[in-house]
Length: 280
Image 1 (cartoon, one colour):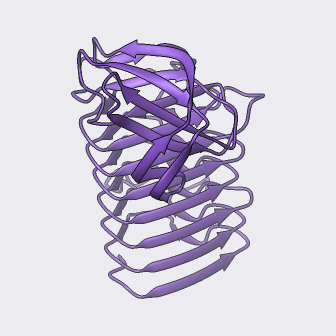
Image 2: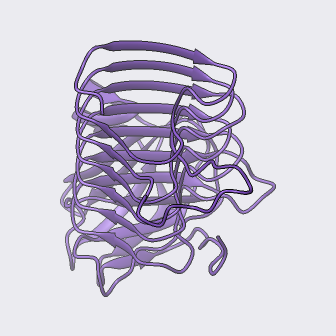
């Protein structure tokens, strides 16, 4: 358990690893450069040992500032459940950015995940998002990697902001989700992406860093029965952005992409690809 302090960790394997147990972080500043995983609650035991069924390796983050870079491994891994309640988390990983053997719960925080090789956020259970801001990017295009990947398990969104860019994504589960989402084709890199309603109300303004096949976006600004248009290019005046996502400013000068959509259900697809299902 970590309750605060400043940790600068450089490792030729895992930087922070609990081999049989759990990791709880309540606060602190973490700068992590690792060959393998940045933070891991694993189940590494000798082959002749029997696993202790009473131990469930999990990771819970309640706060803190994280800069995690890995050259071969994952950003944060939990062999059990992963829960993020708060914190500022920036991950640049070779393998999955966030990976859990069970469910992933995102209840708050500001999370940016960039994965070079595999999925940005990968759960072998379900994914539940109730709050916070999560940007998930997976840039590999020769394998079916996703921004959010939970196979055919539940992907539940009830709040917060999620923005995923990748070859594909798992689709939110309509019967479980209460906040609207839209899935659409990617756009060219290094330009603004803007979504606005018929009366000009902004729903998203984002500086697209990479060309990908599929973008998923969910936010309370996407209102049922409202029609939206996607614009590209243009500029923002007096804007404030974090990781490319604008939280203030005035957008202007964009080009109508020709993609308009009406929110008639919790999940709206006008393009993009669904990720593989039924595979760990």
